[in-house]
Length: 251
Ligand SMILES: *[C@@H]1O[C@H](CO)[C@@H](O)[C@H](O)[C@H]1NC(C)=O
Image (cartoon, rainbow, N blue to C red; front, side, top):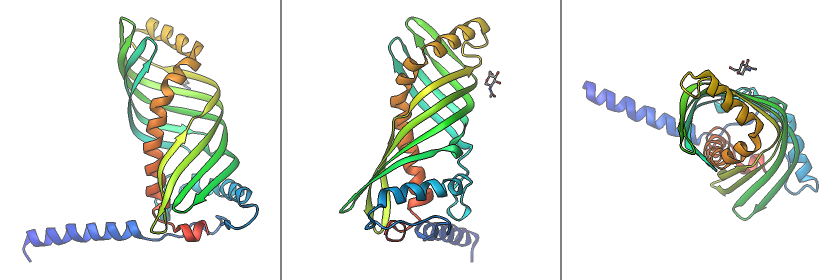
């Protein structure tokens, strides 16, 4: 065989193996309880099943190649920001979110009908901490702002509904959308170098942001929500639902 042919075969094999493992059926860990749709307490059974197996998921599941969720790592997020007088672009790198292990599942509301498979899940997280590196540039009114540095956010008491919208195709649950609008009780932000090393301005901006965090948070939500929808839908499809059968896990 010529080198080219060998290379071609190697690539083809790699593609086939990747294909095979995509379509591969993986069993969930045995500790994950399965509920029956026809049972009268299906909603509460699902809630308990998710709550009881949450830590199993949070620790990561190697068979599913599911990464650890606490801390949850995101390499890169890029977005626009637009609220009142403030507009700009920002990107976040090496973002780590801590605290998801302590998620409480309050209620689960499944809506299954025909091929439609939706689910609402009410959760609360007592405390979360997010940190990473940011880069931003934009303006407040006529003033240019920008810089790059470190940031962290401490959040107390998050409550949210995860709204999963999907459909069933070939015995797989395909998540089309995942909407999350979290309510936050308290939020404190730290960042460095928003004004390219001007400490005075950075301090002023920090106290402004922390005083009016509700306003800023509302301004951020639409782009966060869009990002979560894309990122988390893809995450759930890729790591979990493409590998398990609806008929086995949601019988
Ligand atoms: C958050 O960032 C600030 C400013 O850099 C730093 O002083 C503080 O220690 C950080 N908080 C934590 C919990 O790491």
